[in-house]
Length: 311
Length: 235
Image (cartoon, rainbow over all chains, first blue to last red; front, side, top):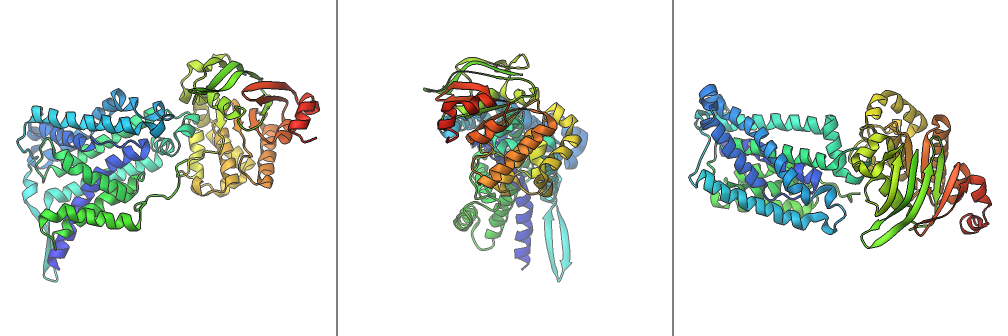
Protein backbone atom coordinates (compact mmCIF):
# COMPACT_ATOMS: atom_id res chain seq x y z
CA UNK A 1 0.00 0.00 0.00
CA UNK A 2 2.76 2.36 0.93
CA UNK A 3 4.58 1.44 -2.26
CA UNK A 4 1.43 2.09 -4.26
CA UNK A 5 0.91 5.54 -2.75
CA UNK A 6 4.56 6.36 -3.24
CA UNK A 7 4.36 5.41 -6.92
CA UNK A 8 1.12 7.36 -7.29
CA UNK A 9 2.74 10.46 -5.82
CA UNK A 10 5.79 10.06 -8.06
CA UNK A 11 3.50 9.56 -11.06
CA UNK A 12 1.50 12.71 -10.33
CA UNK A 13 4.66 14.78 -9.91
CA UNK A 14 6.36 13.60 -13.08
CA UNK A 15 3.00 13.60 -14.87
CA UNK A 16 2.56 17.32 -14.23
CA UNK A 17 5.89 18.03 -15.94
CA UNK A 18 5.16 15.61 -18.81
CA UNK A 19 1.80 17.33 -19.13
CA UNK A 20 3.45 20.71 -19.56
CA UNK A 21 5.88 19.23 -22.08
CA UNK A 22 2.99 17.79 -24.10
CA UNK A 23 1.06 21.06 -23.95
CA UNK A 24 3.90 22.82 -25.77
CA UNK A 25 3.63 20.37 -28.64
CA UNK A 26 -0.17 20.23 -28.42
CA UNK A 27 -0.40 24.00 -28.78
CA UNK A 28 1.65 23.94 -31.97
CA UNK A 29 -0.23 20.99 -33.42
CA UNK A 30 -3.63 22.29 -32.31
CA UNK A 31 -3.21 25.73 -33.84
CA UNK A 32 -1.03 24.98 -36.87
CA UNK A 33 -1.69 21.30 -37.64
CA UNK A 34 2.06 21.03 -38.14
CA UNK A 35 3.77 17.91 -36.80
CA UNK A 36 7.03 19.19 -35.36
CA UNK A 37 9.46 16.28 -35.13
CA UNK A 38 12.13 18.62 -33.82
CA UNK A 39 10.13 19.44 -30.72
CA UNK A 40 12.12 17.05 -28.51
CA UNK A 41 15.28 18.76 -29.68
CA UNK A 42 13.82 22.17 -28.91
CA UNK A 43 13.37 20.77 -25.42
CA UNK A 44 16.99 19.59 -25.37
CA UNK A 45 18.06 23.12 -26.30
CA UNK A 46 15.89 24.44 -23.48
CA UNK A 47 17.70 22.13 -21.05
CA UNK A 48 21.12 23.36 -22.17
CA UNK A 49 20.04 27.00 -22.15
CA UNK A 50 18.80 26.59 -18.57
CA UNK A 51 22.03 24.74 -17.70
CA UNK A 52 24.31 27.45 -19.09
CA UNK A 53 22.21 30.29 -17.70
CA UNK A 54 22.54 28.64 -14.30
CA UNK A 55 26.22 27.70 -14.34
CA UNK A 56 27.85 30.18 -16.70
CA UNK A 57 25.61 33.25 -16.93
CA UNK A 58 25.65 34.10 -13.25
CA UNK A 59 22.21 32.93 -12.16
CA UNK A 60 23.83 30.51 -9.70
CA UNK A 61 25.99 33.29 -8.29
CA UNK A 62 23.06 35.67 -7.79
CA UNK A 63 20.25 33.35 -6.67
CA UNK A 64 22.18 30.44 -5.14
CA UNK A 65 21.80 26.70 -5.53
CA UNK A 66 18.22 26.28 -4.36
CA UNK A 67 16.29 29.02 -6.18
CA UNK A 68 18.83 29.56 -8.95
CA UNK A 69 18.00 26.52 -11.09
CA UNK A 70 14.33 27.43 -11.23
CA UNK A 71 15.09 31.02 -12.21
CA UNK A 72 17.36 29.74 -14.99
CA UNK A 73 14.71 27.26 -16.14
CA UNK A 74 12.02 29.95 -16.31
CA UNK A 75 14.39 32.23 -18.24
CA UNK A 76 15.06 29.46 -20.76
CA UNK A 77 11.37 29.70 -21.72
CA UNK A 78 11.55 33.14 -23.37
CA UNK A 79 14.92 32.27 -24.95
CA UNK A 80 13.46 29.21 -26.67
CA UNK A 81 10.27 31.12 -27.52
CA UNK A 82 12.45 33.57 -29.41
CA UNK A 83 14.26 30.65 -31.04
CA UNK A 84 10.91 29.14 -32.07
CA UNK A 85 9.77 32.50 -33.42
CA UNK A 86 12.87 32.76 -35.63
CA UNK A 87 12.63 29.11 -36.78
CA UNK A 88 9.02 29.67 -37.79
CA UNK A 89 9.78 32.95 -39.53
CA UNK A 90 12.75 31.64 -41.51
CA UNK A 91 11.81 27.99 -42.10
CA UNK A 92 8.44 26.63 -40.98
CA UNK A 93 6.34 29.46 -42.43
CA UNK A 94 7.53 28.49 -45.91
CA UNK A 95 5.91 25.08 -45.69
CA UNK A 96 2.82 25.83 -43.60
CA UNK A 97 -0.04 28.25 -43.05
CA UNK A 98 -1.65 30.28 -45.80
CA UNK A 99 1.23 29.53 -48.15
CA UNK A 100 0.37 25.84 -48.38
CA UNK A 101 -3.34 25.96 -47.55
CA UNK A 102 -4.32 25.24 -51.14
CA UNK A 103 -1.75 22.48 -51.74
CA UNK A 104 -2.54 18.82 -51.64
CA UNK A 105 -1.84 17.52 -48.14
CA UNK A 106 -1.47 21.14 -46.96
CA UNK A 107 2.30 20.87 -47.14
CA UNK A 108 2.53 18.04 -44.60
CA UNK A 109 5.21 16.19 -46.56
CA UNK A 110 7.48 19.20 -46.70
CA UNK A 111 6.83 19.83 -43.01
CA UNK A 112 7.83 16.27 -42.19
CA UNK A 113 11.15 16.52 -44.01
CA UNK A 114 11.88 20.02 -42.75
CA UNK A 115 11.23 19.29 -39.07
CA UNK A 116 13.16 16.00 -39.24
CA UNK A 117 16.02 17.96 -40.83
CA UNK A 118 15.92 20.56 -38.08
CA UNK A 119 15.96 17.72 -35.54
CA UNK A 120 19.10 16.21 -37.08
CA UNK A 121 20.86 19.56 -37.19
CA UNK A 122 20.02 20.32 -33.58
CA UNK A 123 21.09 16.87 -32.35
CA UNK A 124 24.41 16.81 -34.17
CA UNK A 125 25.02 20.51 -33.70
CA UNK A 126 24.38 19.93 -30.00
CA UNK A 127 26.92 17.14 -30.01
CA UNK A 128 29.55 19.47 -31.51
CA UNK A 129 28.81 22.41 -29.23
CA UNK A 130 27.81 20.79 -25.93
CA UNK A 131 29.74 17.50 -26.21
CA UNK A 132 28.50 14.05 -25.31
CA UNK A 133 29.09 14.26 -21.57
CA UNK A 134 25.91 13.98 -19.52
CA UNK A 135 24.86 17.27 -17.99
CA UNK A 136 22.36 18.00 -15.26
CA UNK A 137 20.98 21.01 -13.44
CA UNK A 138 22.01 20.17 -9.90
CA UNK A 139 20.27 21.54 -6.92
CA UNK A 140 20.51 20.29 -3.34
CA UNK A 141 16.72 19.98 -3.49
CA UNK A 142 17.09 17.05 -5.91
CA UNK A 143 18.47 14.90 -3.12
CA UNK A 144 16.18 15.85 -0.27
CA UNK A 145 12.56 15.10 0.41
CA UNK A 146 9.50 16.22 2.32
CA UNK A 147 7.86 13.56 4.40
CA UNK A 148 4.06 13.44 4.23
CA UNK A 149 2.60 11.65 7.20
CA UNK A 150 2.92 9.38 8.94
CA UNK A 151 -0.80 8.65 8.64
CA UNK A 152 -1.85 5.10 9.60
CA UNK A 153 1.87 4.35 9.99
CA UNK A 154 2.51 5.24 6.35
CA UNK A 155 4.55 8.12 5.06
CA UNK A 156 5.15 9.28 1.54
CA UNK A 157 8.33 11.03 0.57
CA UNK A 158 8.15 13.85 -1.93
CA UNK A 159 11.41 14.75 -3.60
CA UNK A 160 11.71 18.52 -3.09
CA UNK A 161 12.94 19.32 -6.59
CA UNK A 162 10.20 17.21 -8.18
CA UNK A 163 7.60 18.78 -5.91
CA UNK A 164 8.64 22.27 -6.99
CA UNK A 165 8.80 21.12 -10.62
CA UNK A 166 5.19 19.98 -10.44
CA UNK A 167 4.04 23.21 -8.80
CA UNK A 168 5.83 25.32 -11.44
CA UNK A 169 4.24 23.18 -14.19
CA UNK A 170 0.77 23.63 -12.77
CA UNK A 171 1.27 27.38 -12.42
CA UNK A 172 2.38 27.75 -16.03
CA UNK A 173 -0.45 25.50 -17.17
CA UNK A 174 -2.96 27.69 -15.32
CA UNK A 175 -1.54 30.86 -16.83
CA UNK A 176 -1.60 29.30 -20.29
CA UNK A 177 -5.19 28.13 -20.05
CA UNK A 178 -6.21 31.60 -18.87
CA UNK A 179 -4.39 33.08 -21.85
CA UNK A 180 -6.02 30.64 -24.28
CA UNK A 181 -9.56 30.91 -22.93
CA UNK A 182 -9.79 34.53 -21.81
CA UNK A 183 -7.42 36.78 -23.72
CA UNK A 184 -7.98 38.26 -27.14
CA UNK A 185 -4.77 36.66 -28.43
CA UNK A 186 -5.82 33.25 -27.10
CA UNK A 187 -9.23 33.48 -28.70
CA UNK A 188 -7.77 34.50 -32.04
CA UNK A 189 -5.35 31.53 -31.84
CA UNK A 190 -8.33 29.22 -31.35
CA UNK A 191 -10.23 30.89 -34.19
CA UNK A 192 -7.22 30.49 -36.49
CA UNK A 193 -7.05 26.82 -35.50
CA UNK A 194 -10.78 26.24 -36.08
CA UNK A 195 -10.94 27.79 -39.51
CA UNK A 196 -7.95 29.67 -40.93
CA UNK A 197 -9.91 31.03 -43.90
CA UNK A 198 -12.72 32.46 -41.81
CA UNK A 199 -10.13 33.84 -39.37
CA UNK A 200 -8.56 35.75 -42.26
CA UNK A 201 -12.01 37.17 -43.09
CA UNK A 202 -12.13 38.46 -39.50
CA UNK A 203 -8.86 40.30 -40.02
CA UNK A 204 -6.74 37.81 -38.08
CA UNK A 205 -3.28 37.37 -39.58
CA UNK A 206 -3.16 33.57 -39.54
CA UNK A 207 0.56 33.28 -40.19
CA UNK A 208 1.24 35.58 -37.28
CA UNK A 209 -1.09 33.53 -35.09
CA UNK A 210 0.89 30.44 -36.10
CA UNK A 211 4.15 32.15 -35.22
CA UNK A 212 2.80 33.08 -31.82
CA UNK A 213 1.69 29.49 -31.20
CA UNK A 214 5.03 28.10 -32.35
CA UNK A 215 6.98 30.46 -30.11
CA UNK A 216 4.72 29.82 -27.11
CA UNK A 217 4.84 26.06 -27.63
CA UNK A 218 8.64 26.08 -27.90
CA UNK A 219 9.02 28.17 -24.76
CA UNK A 220 6.65 26.02 -22.73
CA UNK A 221 8.35 22.76 -23.68
CA UNK A 222 11.74 24.33 -22.93
CA UNK A 223 10.59 25.09 -19.38
CA UNK A 224 9.26 21.54 -19.00
CA UNK A 225 12.65 20.26 -20.21
CA UNK A 226 14.50 22.39 -17.71
CA UNK A 227 12.28 21.06 -14.92
CA UNK A 228 12.99 17.47 -15.96
CA UNK A 229 16.71 18.26 -15.99
CA UNK A 230 16.71 18.89 -12.24
CA UNK A 231 16.29 15.12 -11.83
CA UNK A 232 17.33 13.48 -15.04
CA UNK A 233 20.73 14.01 -16.67
CA UNK A 234 20.61 14.94 -20.33
CA UNK A 235 22.68 14.89 -23.51
CA UNK A 236 22.25 16.25 -27.06
CA UNK A 237 20.15 13.26 -28.15
CA UNK A 238 17.79 13.38 -25.19
CA UNK A 239 15.03 14.82 -27.39
CA UNK A 240 14.52 11.45 -29.06
CA UNK A 241 13.63 9.89 -25.71
CA UNK A 242 10.97 12.47 -24.98
CA UNK A 243 9.49 13.29 -28.38
CA UNK A 244 7.71 9.93 -28.48
CA UNK A 245 6.26 10.50 -25.04
CA UNK A 246 5.14 13.95 -26.20
CA UNK A 247 3.33 12.57 -29.22
CA UNK A 248 1.73 9.81 -27.19
CA UNK A 249 0.51 12.45 -24.73
CA UNK A 250 -0.89 14.72 -27.43
CA UNK A 251 -2.68 11.83 -29.15
CA UNK A 252 -4.04 10.51 -25.85
CA UNK A 253 -5.36 13.92 -24.92
CA UNK A 254 -7.02 14.30 -28.30
CA UNK A 255 -5.28 15.87 -31.30
CA UNK A 256 -6.04 19.55 -31.27
CA UNK A 257 -7.03 19.82 -27.62
CA UNK A 258 -4.52 21.91 -25.69
CA UNK A 259 -5.88 21.09 -22.24
CA UNK A 260 -6.20 17.45 -23.34
CA UNK A 261 -2.46 17.30 -24.05
CA UNK A 262 -1.81 18.08 -20.39
CA UNK A 263 -3.95 15.17 -19.21
CA UNK A 264 -2.36 12.94 -21.83
CA UNK A 265 1.08 13.76 -20.42
CA UNK A 266 -0.20 13.28 -16.89
CA UNK A 267 -1.53 9.82 -17.81
CA UNK A 268 1.81 8.82 -19.24
CA UNK A 269 3.64 9.97 -16.12
CA UNK A 270 1.27 7.98 -13.92
CA UNK A 271 1.49 4.82 -16.03
CA UNK A 272 5.26 5.06 -16.17
CA UNK A 273 5.64 5.31 -12.41
CA UNK A 274 2.89 2.88 -11.46
CA UNK A 275 4.22 0.25 -13.83
CA UNK A 276 7.38 0.01 -11.72
CA UNK A 277 5.26 -1.67 -9.05
CA UNK A 278 4.70 -4.75 -11.17
CA UNK A 279 7.18 -4.55 -14.02
CA UNK A 280 10.96 -4.22 -14.21
CA UNK A 281 12.05 -0.63 -14.96
CA UNK A 282 13.29 -1.62 -18.41
CA UNK A 283 9.67 -2.20 -19.38
CA UNK A 284 8.43 1.25 -18.22
CA UNK A 285 8.18 2.55 -21.76
CA UNK A 286 6.61 -0.65 -23.02
CA UNK A 287 3.93 -0.23 -20.35
CA UNK A 288 3.25 3.31 -21.59
CA UNK A 289 2.53 2.06 -25.07
CA UNK A 290 0.40 -0.85 -23.97
CA UNK A 291 -1.81 1.57 -22.06
CA UNK A 292 -1.66 3.98 -24.97
CA UNK A 293 -2.94 1.33 -27.36
CA UNK A 294 -5.67 0.28 -24.96
CA UNK A 295 -6.95 3.82 -24.57
CA UNK A 296 -6.79 4.53 -28.30
CA UNK A 297 -8.56 1.24 -28.95
CA UNK A 298 -11.55 2.26 -26.86
CA UNK A 299 -11.46 5.98 -27.44
CA UNK A 300 -9.78 6.71 -30.77
CA UNK A 301 -10.35 10.45 -30.54
CA UNK A 302 -8.43 10.70 -27.25
CA UNK A 303 -9.74 12.08 -23.96
CA UNK A 304 -10.76 15.50 -25.22
CA UNK A 305 -10.79 14.96 -28.96
CA UNK A 306 -13.94 15.81 -30.80
CA UNK A 307 -15.38 13.48 -33.38
CA UNK A 308 -16.16 16.27 -35.78
CA UNK A 309 -14.78 17.20 -39.12
CA UNK A 310 -12.73 20.32 -39.20
CA UNK A 311 -14.56 22.84 -41.40
CA UNK B 1 -17.49 52.07 -52.85
CA UNK B 2 -16.42 48.74 -54.37
CA UNK B 3 -15.23 48.78 -57.96
CA UNK B 4 -14.22 45.57 -59.69
CA UNK B 5 -12.66 46.01 -63.13
CA UNK B 6 -12.13 43.23 -65.63
CA UNK B 7 -11.37 40.68 -62.94
CA UNK B 8 -10.08 37.27 -63.97
CA UNK B 9 -9.28 34.55 -61.47
CA UNK B 10 -9.30 30.80 -61.01
CA UNK B 11 -7.58 27.77 -59.62
CA UNK B 12 -4.22 26.94 -61.26
CA UNK B 13 -5.24 25.64 -64.67
CA UNK B 14 -8.94 26.33 -64.51
CA UNK B 15 -10.05 29.92 -65.02
CA UNK B 16 -13.32 30.65 -63.23
CA UNK B 17 -13.81 34.41 -63.63
CA UNK B 18 -13.37 36.04 -66.98
CA UNK B 19 -13.21 39.82 -67.09
CA UNK B 20 -15.87 40.50 -64.48
CA UNK B 21 -16.70 44.16 -63.75
CA UNK B 22 -19.00 45.03 -60.90
CA UNK B 23 -19.75 48.28 -59.13
CA UNK B 24 -21.25 48.79 -55.68
CA UNK B 25 -22.07 52.35 -54.60
CA UNK B 26 -22.27 53.43 -50.98
CA UNK B 27 -25.66 52.57 -49.49
CA UNK B 28 -26.59 50.21 -52.31
CA UNK B 29 -27.84 46.67 -51.99
CA UNK B 30 -26.37 44.73 -54.91
CA UNK B 31 -27.21 41.13 -55.72
CA UNK B 32 -25.18 38.78 -57.88
CA UNK B 33 -27.18 35.82 -59.08
CA UNK B 34 -26.39 32.90 -61.28
CA UNK B 35 -26.22 29.13 -61.38
CA UNK B 36 -23.87 26.86 -59.49
CA UNK B 37 -20.30 27.11 -60.72
CA UNK B 38 -20.78 30.56 -62.25
CA UNK B 39 -17.89 31.91 -60.14
CA UNK B 40 -19.84 33.72 -57.42
CA UNK B 41 -17.88 32.30 -54.50
CA UNK B 42 -14.62 32.65 -56.40
CA UNK B 43 -15.43 36.32 -56.84
CA UNK B 44 -15.90 36.76 -53.09
CA UNK B 45 -12.72 34.85 -52.28
CA UNK B 46 -10.81 37.10 -54.63
CA UNK B 47 -12.25 40.22 -53.00
CA UNK B 48 -11.22 38.86 -49.58
CA UNK B 49 -7.78 37.93 -50.83
CA UNK B 50 -7.93 34.15 -50.33
CA UNK B 51 -7.40 33.85 -54.09
CA UNK B 52 -5.06 35.99 -56.18
CA UNK B 53 -6.59 37.16 -59.43
CA UNK B 54 -4.78 36.61 -62.71
CA UNK B 55 -5.90 39.94 -64.09
CA UNK B 56 -7.99 43.04 -63.46
CA UNK B 57 -8.36 45.23 -60.40
CA UNK B 58 -10.40 45.63 -57.21
CA UNK B 59 -10.76 49.03 -55.58
CA UNK B 60 -12.41 49.70 -52.25
CA UNK B 61 -13.05 53.37 -51.50
CA UNK B 62 -10.22 54.19 -53.86
CA UNK B 63 -7.76 51.75 -52.24
CA UNK B 64 -6.21 49.15 -54.53
CA UNK B 65 -7.22 45.99 -52.67
CA UNK B 66 -4.73 43.79 -54.47
CA UNK B 67 -1.95 45.67 -52.70
CA UNK B 68 -3.54 45.01 -49.28
CA UNK B 69 -2.70 41.69 -47.51
CA UNK B 70 -5.81 39.50 -47.05
CA UNK B 71 -5.97 39.83 -43.26
CA UNK B 72 -5.81 43.64 -43.55
CA UNK B 73 -8.85 43.87 -45.82
CA UNK B 74 -11.28 43.29 -42.95
CA UNK B 75 -9.71 46.28 -41.22
CA UNK B 76 -10.62 48.48 -44.20
CA UNK B 77 -14.29 47.77 -43.51
CA UNK B 78 -15.08 44.67 -45.58
CA UNK B 79 -17.01 41.97 -43.75
CA UNK B 80 -17.29 38.61 -45.48
CA UNK B 81 -20.06 36.24 -44.39
CA UNK B 82 -18.74 33.13 -46.13
CA UNK B 83 -20.46 30.36 -48.00
CA UNK B 84 -21.41 27.53 -45.68
CA UNK B 85 -21.34 29.87 -42.66
CA UNK B 86 -17.87 28.86 -41.39
CA UNK B 87 -18.44 29.88 -37.79
CA UNK B 88 -15.69 28.85 -35.34
CA UNK B 89 -17.17 25.61 -33.94
CA UNK B 90 -15.08 25.38 -30.76
CA UNK B 91 -15.69 29.00 -29.78
CA UNK B 92 -18.86 30.15 -28.05
CA UNK B 93 -21.40 32.36 -29.79
CA UNK B 94 -20.09 35.36 -27.84
CA UNK B 95 -16.47 34.54 -28.71
CA UNK B 96 -17.42 34.21 -32.38
CA UNK B 97 -18.91 37.69 -32.22
CA UNK B 98 -15.74 38.96 -30.51
CA UNK B 99 -13.70 37.53 -33.40
CA UNK B 100 -15.91 39.55 -35.73
CA UNK B 101 -14.93 42.61 -33.71
CA UNK B 102 -11.16 42.21 -34.22
CA UNK B 103 -11.11 45.37 -36.32
CA UNK B 104 -10.44 48.74 -34.75
CA UNK B 105 -13.93 50.02 -35.48
CA UNK B 106 -15.40 46.76 -34.19
CA UNK B 107 -13.61 47.18 -30.87
CA UNK B 108 -14.61 50.81 -30.58
CA UNK B 109 -18.32 50.18 -31.24
CA UNK B 110 -18.47 46.81 -29.47
CA UNK B 111 -21.12 47.69 -26.89
CA UNK B 112 -23.45 49.42 -29.35
CA UNK B 113 -22.94 46.74 -32.00
CA UNK B 114 -23.65 43.85 -29.70
CA UNK B 115 -26.87 45.49 -28.56
CA UNK B 116 -28.02 45.96 -32.16
CA UNK B 117 -27.00 42.47 -33.19
CA UNK B 118 -28.89 40.92 -30.28
CA UNK B 119 -31.95 43.01 -31.15
CA UNK B 120 -31.85 41.89 -34.79
CA UNK B 121 -30.92 38.29 -34.08
CA UNK B 122 -32.29 37.50 -30.62
CA UNK B 123 -31.39 33.82 -30.89
CA UNK B 124 -27.74 34.81 -30.52
CA UNK B 125 -28.44 36.46 -27.19
CA UNK B 126 -30.23 33.35 -25.97
CA UNK B 127 -27.37 31.09 -27.02
CA UNK B 128 -24.48 33.39 -26.23
CA UNK B 129 -22.49 30.90 -24.17
CA UNK B 130 -23.19 27.87 -26.34
CA UNK B 131 -20.45 26.48 -28.60
CA UNK B 132 -21.09 27.56 -32.19
CA UNK B 133 -20.52 24.00 -33.42
CA UNK B 134 -23.64 22.89 -31.55
CA UNK B 135 -25.99 25.42 -33.20
CA UNK B 136 -28.41 24.47 -35.95
CA UNK B 137 -27.69 25.53 -39.52
CA UNK B 138 -30.03 28.51 -39.37
CA UNK B 139 -28.59 29.65 -36.06
CA UNK B 140 -25.05 29.31 -37.43
CA UNK B 141 -26.07 31.43 -40.41
CA UNK B 142 -27.39 34.13 -38.10
CA UNK B 143 -24.19 33.92 -36.08
CA UNK B 144 -22.14 34.31 -39.26
CA UNK B 145 -24.19 37.41 -40.13
CA UNK B 146 -23.87 38.76 -36.58
CA UNK B 147 -20.14 38.12 -36.67
CA UNK B 148 -19.92 40.11 -39.89
CA UNK B 149 -21.90 42.99 -38.39
CA UNK B 150 -19.71 43.05 -35.27
CA UNK B 151 -16.84 44.54 -37.24
CA UNK B 152 -18.82 47.75 -37.97
CA UNK B 153 -18.32 47.10 -41.67
CA UNK B 154 -18.72 49.61 -44.48
CA UNK B 155 -19.54 46.75 -46.84
CA UNK B 156 -21.21 43.48 -45.85
CA UNK B 157 -20.60 40.65 -48.32
CA UNK B 158 -23.00 37.73 -48.00
CA UNK B 159 -22.23 34.48 -49.80
CA UNK B 160 -25.39 32.38 -50.23
CA UNK B 161 -26.91 32.91 -46.79
CA UNK B 162 -29.74 30.52 -47.73
CA UNK B 163 -27.45 27.63 -48.62
CA UNK B 164 -28.30 24.33 -46.96
CA UNK B 165 -31.18 25.76 -44.96
CA UNK B 166 -34.78 24.60 -44.86
CA UNK B 167 -36.92 26.90 -47.03
CA UNK B 168 -38.73 28.42 -44.05
CA UNK B 169 -35.42 29.08 -42.27
CA UNK B 170 -33.96 30.58 -45.42
CA UNK B 171 -37.00 32.85 -45.67
CA UNK B 172 -36.48 33.93 -42.10
CA UNK B 173 -32.78 34.68 -42.66
CA UNK B 174 -33.71 36.74 -45.71
CA UNK B 175 -36.35 38.62 -43.82
CA UNK B 176 -33.81 39.42 -41.07
CA UNK B 177 -31.31 40.66 -43.67
CA UNK B 178 -33.87 42.99 -45.21
CA UNK B 179 -34.76 44.30 -41.77
CA UNK B 180 -31.07 44.87 -40.90
CA UNK B 181 -30.60 46.62 -44.21
CA UNK B 182 -33.71 48.79 -43.69
CA UNK B 183 -32.65 49.89 -40.21
CA UNK B 184 -28.92 50.34 -40.78
CA UNK B 185 -28.73 51.41 -44.44
CA UNK B 186 -25.62 49.24 -44.67
CA UNK B 187 -24.08 48.67 -48.09
CA UNK B 188 -24.55 45.03 -48.99
CA UNK B 189 -23.27 42.74 -51.68
CA UNK B 190 -25.23 39.50 -51.87
CA UNK B 191 -24.51 36.37 -53.82
CA UNK B 192 -27.53 34.09 -54.08
CA UNK B 193 -29.05 31.17 -55.90
CA UNK B 194 -32.54 32.12 -54.74
CA UNK B 195 -32.82 34.54 -57.60
CA UNK B 196 -36.39 35.72 -57.06
CA UNK B 197 -35.86 36.78 -53.45
CA UNK B 198 -32.45 38.28 -54.14
CA UNK B 199 -33.66 40.41 -57.07
CA UNK B 200 -36.80 41.46 -55.27
CA UNK B 201 -34.98 43.19 -52.43
CA UNK B 202 -31.83 44.40 -54.21
CA UNK B 203 -31.39 47.84 -55.79
CA UNK B 204 -29.15 46.53 -58.51
CA UNK B 205 -28.35 43.09 -59.84
CA UNK B 206 -25.80 41.23 -61.91
CA UNK B 207 -26.32 37.88 -63.58
CA UNK B 208 -23.13 35.84 -63.61
CA UNK B 209 -22.85 32.84 -65.92
CA UNK B 210 -19.73 30.77 -66.59
CA UNK B 211 -17.48 33.48 -65.16
CA UNK B 212 -18.95 36.42 -67.11
CA UNK B 213 -21.48 39.09 -66.33
CA UNK B 214 -24.20 38.37 -68.88
CA UNK B 215 -26.72 40.90 -67.65
CA UNK B 216 -26.96 43.78 -65.23
CA UNK B 217 -29.46 46.38 -64.25
CA UNK B 218 -31.77 47.64 -61.55
CA UNK B 219 -34.27 45.26 -60.13
CA UNK B 220 -37.18 46.16 -62.46
CA UNK B 221 -35.05 45.78 -65.58
CA UNK B 222 -33.75 42.42 -64.50
CA UNK B 223 -37.06 41.04 -63.39
CA UNK B 224 -38.62 42.14 -66.66
CA UNK B 225 -35.86 40.54 -68.74
CA UNK B 226 -37.02 37.51 -70.68
CA UNK B 227 -33.91 35.48 -70.08
CA UNK B 228 -34.03 36.01 -66.34
CA UNK B 229 -37.73 35.21 -66.23
CA UNK B 230 -37.27 31.99 -68.14
CA UNK B 231 -34.02 30.78 -66.61
CA UNK B 232 -34.39 31.80 -62.98
CA UNK B 233 -37.86 32.93 -62.14
CA UNK B 234 -39.64 30.06 -63.83
CA UNK B 235 -42.09 32.25 -65.69
